[in-house]
Amino acid sequence: MDAKKPYLAVILIQAIYAGMFLLSKAAFNGGMNSFVFVFYRQAAGTIFLAPIAVFFEWKKAVPLSFLTFCKIFLLSLFGITLSLDIYSMAIVYTSATLAAATTNCLPVTTFFLAVLLRMEVFKWKTTAGVAKLTGILVCMAGAATLAFYKGPHLKLIGGHHHLLGHPKIEGHHAPLPSSTAWIKGCFLFLLSNIFWGLWLVLQATVMKSYPPKLLFVTLQCFLSTIQSFAIAIAFERDPHQWKLGWNVRLVAVAYCGIIVTGVTYYLQACVLEKKGPVFLAMSTPLAFIMTMFSSAILLGEIITLGSLVGGLLLVGGLYSVLWGKSREHKANDVGNLTAAKVDSECSELKEVVPAKAPPLPLVV
Image 1: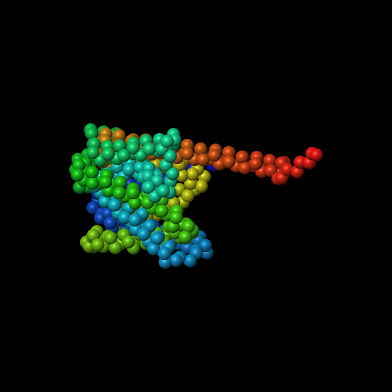
Image 2: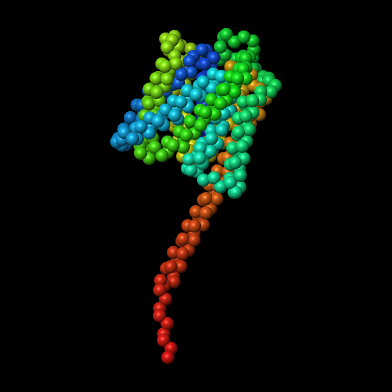
């Protein structure tokens, strides 16, 4: 049973993310302001994480210098606050299915940023390098397909229920956004992934200055709450938009703030410890598949051929990059083992052969 736990964990993680895409879109369909949503989401996450972090890691806390605080503040601003605000704007313009599809290019975007920042070596003459380059190009093709090609509509069984759909929607399906709004949404998703990728790349460096993980995440969440409140109050002054009733808005905020922030953080940490980052990243397409079918059934969203083809290209690009990374790690492991074996053999030879040969007798 223990061997199956990581597989069950990644399925649950991706199901939680699929629920996040669906509930976020349902809240926005109900008229909720995206900036207000992000603020409430971060506030709920902070309230949930703060007591846990204090209980488990307060004794491990290290002094926080002003420079480190500034780094964490900027990391929160770009990697969390702006990333989530831009993502929320993008899902308003597009659909939950597209939101789930574009998450597949996050590992590719992160790798590309790591290469640009010289934190990752890109050997394009090797098989692994060719696979990575192919994955990047396929992801770019997938993103272009999602943005510029819609194609015919695909009819799914049960697609007329839209249980979470807004009551103002008429007919069996939610209308497709205009081409301009769709392209704008795709661009915003790309920008959100860039900020998110930068956050993933840079936070490892910042964590060296402040190692306690839970306190580190909680501090970022708290700072993001303040930042997202400043942005929300600047763009939305209507008091009605700030009210949370017993409706899908409250459910979406509580779900994204508590379940996504709290439960997935713990599950992802467990999976990373047992199986590594590649295994976790390979499960990302599950959220796309779950969201695509669920959004058609629960939200009444129209699935187009362009969305399906673009999503599959993103998944193909993701697997190509991950395969290249896996092959590269195996080559490095073999190289390290070979080097260790050579060092061991050299050490054994030094013990057998004298360090200095005895002088030869003089022959007269």
